[in-house]
Length: 327
Picture 1 (cartoon, rainbow, N blue to C red):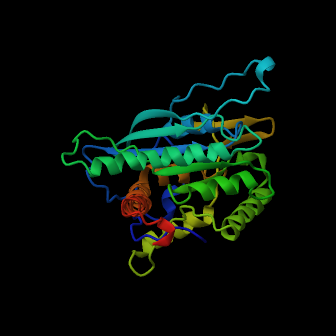
Picture 2 (picture 1 turned 120 degrees about the vertical axis):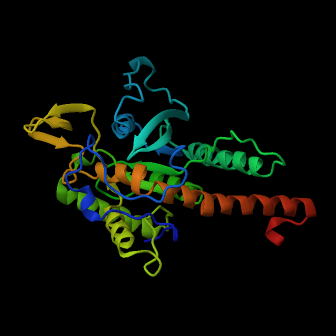
Picture 3 (picture 1 turned 60 degrees about the vertical axis):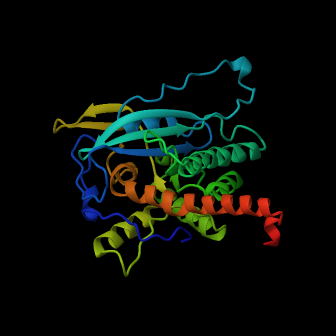
């Protein structure tokens, strides 16, 4: 699988930590997080075509209503293409006693047009602007002690569950942003596929990611340097890609008295936090617990460093009057 290489993989408490997971329970796991007492800043961007449940997913992820419900638009203006916008939402969270200043950036309007090239450019520009802010702060003689790191640590890309593999839109977007952010592909509304259809679709998606050499966050590890527990966990999570997601804000009390988040259908129900029904619990645990540090470290040590090198090289070439291509 094509992806980043890193020796900064986070440890886990074993593959069985996902079994019996419920959003209201205390999540197990060990950490190597620094500065835990003063909390962590963590930023995620969600990108996907309209109608894939991003709003519901974000509210489910944060375990409260962060984004308002999507209102049905005026039929008379439904044909009008709405521009893509960036909408950040800040949530103060706590996971295993660790305070997290969590920012999720939604991108309503993405994929609305026939030609979405401008959307690709806007997302890349947004990511690079955050890097530019950090670079400017680093080069200051006197730094601002209250400077907030607004770099995006992960981009969750919502894949339409067509059953046929990646679309051209998916390929182009992920390739364009893959060298600027940790891309994590997810299958939206995965309960619209049968178990066999979902497994086949996941396989096709990963084959497309390999064939088109799309850089994604594929849970890198070093078999020689990392402990067996870390290697085993990352192998397990890598095999789940792309994560199959179901979101819901509907809650029921089961026979044991536990609150369960579900989607109810005439034929039965899908439990959001049940690992036998979807991968939501494992994705949430990975994002906000076991791999949060790794995502931040890869952002700073690899992605940002690559941007910084490119930027400074271009500036030096410009000052010397030598074209970058000629160097």
